[in-house]
Image (cartoon, rainbow, N blue to C red; front, top):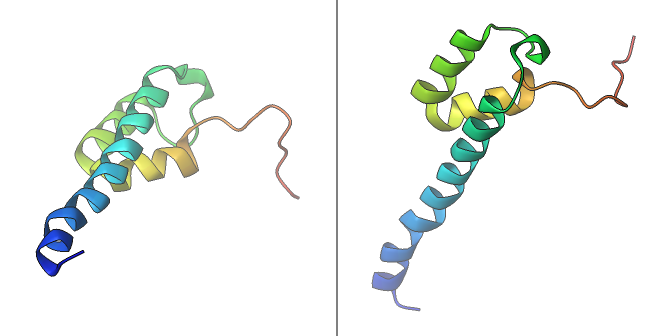
Amino acid sequence: MTVAGVDVLLPWLVLLPCVAIWAYSLVDFSQTDERDMRIFSRDVWLVLIVLGSVVGGLAWLVAGRPRPPGLRRRT
């Protein structure tokens, strides 16, 4: 592959996973009941995901979505 080919392909290799993470987070957020959300309210999470794009989406996946029923916190 030539240098010109890498220059064309590289932005897509970065952009597509970022858009996929953001889209998955937005869909997962929209299907989650507000009572199950952690840390913030639904309105705050919506603003974080939409305006924060990938960082907001990752924050939702790590800190906002409900824990699976079998997973317990360590004490």
